[in-house]
Image (cartoon, rainbow, N blue to C red; front, side, top):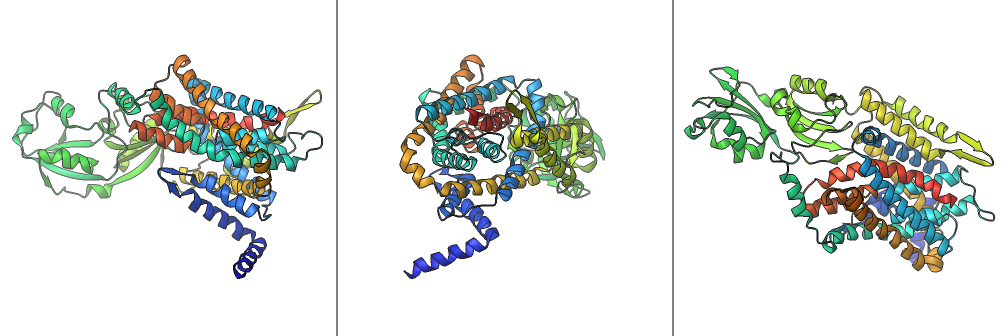
Length: 558
């Protein structure tokens, strides 16, 4: 009895403190999402959803204004992140991933509509079914906002608020299997089809005879003096082929002068090698050459770590082998990321617009490389808040614009307007690097906070009716969600292999990207023991986010 009174008192305090309640939900969500069962965890989105459902059961609600702010931050950031790649890839070699994303989204859309009609599910449930089955938060956000903004008119006898609730509960009930089922299927499907992802990934990597090592860390600058005579008997060309890791920066000093060895030249006893490289390169390779000596100056004090955004036309589409970053610019390449996803470093890897490369080198050399390929990001803590604020405002205004065709009003709606604004600003940013700066860390927090703020509102709204919905249509809704999750995976795989001819390792990455599931990507990369699937993921992810956002409002019309 006393425990019940304490709990009731806590609920009363929370009702009077909405800020406390919100951040309690977010904190609880992260704790719940971080719980691992084997290698499986729900993640923060599902965690916040469940924390919200718990308090929603006690009739807590979030202010529509607060949820709308979260929605705006999330959808605009999704567009901004996709902007550089979306237009660039669409014009070039991304049509196969665009087609893959369309087929998977279209299959899920069709199944959700058919299931809703056959099972006579409540209006709005189809959007929850699609977003939960495909684990697509943008779909959910777009559907609820379309109803809230009056873009979609509810059927007679049904209120917009009731449909919003149906979207939320449909999503909450189907999301868990969507997440767990997708991960399980992505893990089992290669085994069912007899595909050894690790073997396939190695075969794909073997096509690049001069593969670079993976993302580098623990970089150091050191100097060695040649004392091992064995290394003075090997021509420079053979030394490079046998010992160089293709990224480390090596400078040769002889008699106080920096020299470059020709292919048939040789090292001499007493030569000094100034090297900028990962620690492993020193311990496994360079230590054989001779003794480490103290440099004249502390090279590490004159080097910097920087990020360079690829925007220049003469760099976009070029491979790392063509750029020869270490040889031409004496800068160490430590990593490449695309849309926040780390990608494999191989010499045949081609840079795309908006890619971010991490480098270590002398300040002047980093600047030289920056002029060649794009824009050096040093003041990465600065955000162009003017562009960010007006970008969201413009997106909302664009979403309000409609064209009347007969009795039908056609418009992008808030989701479409914000997405279009984000795409445009993200793309313009890739052309003019000084415009619209939104560093990756700032974009992550805005996107993550916006999504979780919105998701907390969804959980609170779903908590009020989830038990009733489970009692009435729970089993059939779960079954429908299972079909929305599984069938698009099979359709996407066979379409990708038979029609698009995508390599299996890249295809599984593309399927996870088409379903916007970062958790599933980690399963694929682990199974392949390679980061190559990330190339397929990033190829499809930008398109999938856009397509599934648009689908969220369209599906309500069926």
